[in-house]
Length: 279
Image 1 (spheres, one colour):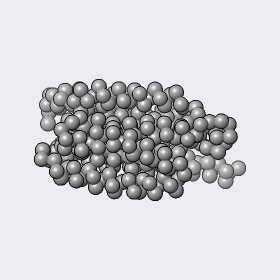
Image 2: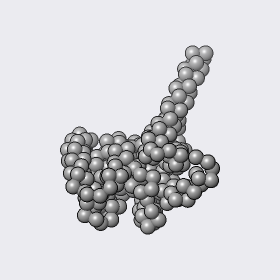
Image 3: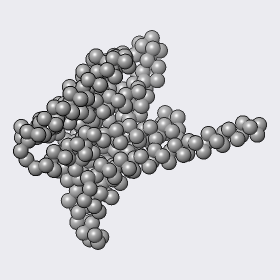
């Protein structure tokens, strides 16, 4: 593929690139709270019902994004209302995941259209986002970002020490439910770009990477957003040169960033150990 052909293809997927950029930023930011609240498993649980909602919408011939959002919000509400404790939350997620995945597979089996549309819901599709959908995805992302900024301080407090936060008057249960709704919306956006099976690559891995190299409450969210942005946009740009879905490229870049961050953490720990020994 020559450069001219590449730029022609790039023109065709502008909406996907912009959606990936927005998703990388939002996913990295909300991923910080996902890690702090130990809810990586919840992301996967929500994504399965989001997939079921999107598959049902595809079968019925209605807006796939709307179906994905509805599935995500149902899962987020169930987990938020019934999973206050970690043990209850994990058991609920464990029940929802196979149920959502089974429903999604059923709806896709009944769908008579192109197989590429079915596959795209699971693993992402580089041309799955048009400019009409982009407006909706950006709108949802702006709502999520605005809401996170409004509840940032109490949510941070509640995420780091729930018992003390409750003692200080922080409405922990209400915050947990609001956060789950915001997470559900973010997952619904993610499914459109990277697919239901691989959303962890943008909602967990960037934040996990950032936490390996910093503990700063300012630097960690910034790094997580940068890592998410690089993974999403980089994966799409590299995928243009091949015939594979975008998800293997996004997940590979995200994983490489995590490995580099682990190596940085390991070298830093070795340096500190040597300093202590020398002292």
